[in-house]
Image (cartoon, rainbow, N blue to C red; front, side):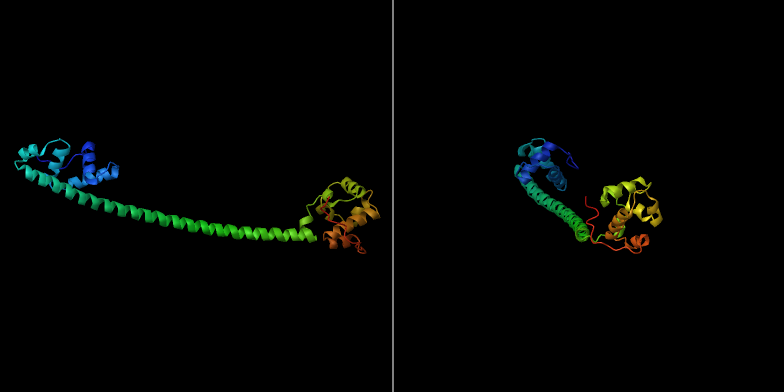
Length: 236
């Protein structure tokens, strides 16, 4: 009649669980904890619990089975329950410590992740601040018409807002569509361009001078005299 280890019996485990823990909130971890605690008892104690809960034997039947008094059976039973409670509580405390350790590890990982996100956020903010500073400077330059000349080379003739006569004369010349194209022209090119008279040439030079290409303007006409602002060359 020797039983080395209590088998995994759900009904038995539930009954022991209710006896030890005192509630019906079952869980895999808790049920296994109960069974492990049962198997840690002495053999006679395990057998008394098994035959009581799994086989439904009374203390009188156990007394006959083991050849001991009913009082002794009761003593073994309640002693086993008390010992089981202690073993179960000890085991659950160990499990709780492991869970706490895992939670601490997860919390540490979360903190490291948060720190990394804060670093990224600060970097993003710094880059954003630099971008906004650049935009503000650009807005100021545009407002004051202090735009670097190099920015104008890709501006089209339409955006320079020439008079219709000057615009049409330039468009008839093959390849003249942007400021860059104008910068490739010399005085002879203008003289050979139909309908580019003194008035149109002066308009072109005044416009190019206003956006910072004064060296080019003087190469076309060394005697050039600016006549004042021609207005925003980008405005329509």
